[in-house]
Length: 176
Image (cartoon, rainbow, N blue to C red):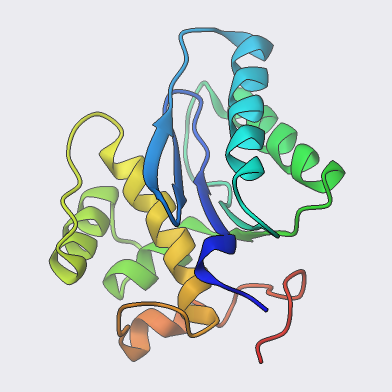
């Protein structure tokens, strides 16, 4: 039986990984560099998972259009986190950034500020400070799972719900 406590949203970033659980949201920030940074982020995520019974995880997919000198390191982080989830036997799905944006705003090309603004307007949650957009993205990823299973506390319009249609949910339990 699924419950709201099972879901974890992750917006992976080398400088500010956003996370969202039933207990709230936060960011993982580290001053380390290279593989030590990736290791620290993975360990912190695994510690988060220890507090969740039968976790299901949504990881934001890669932003392929993003041009960055950190693209390889970002890919290493994404691969390391996905490998840790796989090894731990924790089901996870990837949600493309465009689907997250469409869920939050009705438009797949909305920027992070628009996502934060729309989520804030809908929920009354105030996102502020360093890493607020990463926390909000992680919250939206978690909320997408809740909406898919009919467990959301919010009513999402048809455009938002369309964002769920192109996600591969096959690694997760069936809807009841």
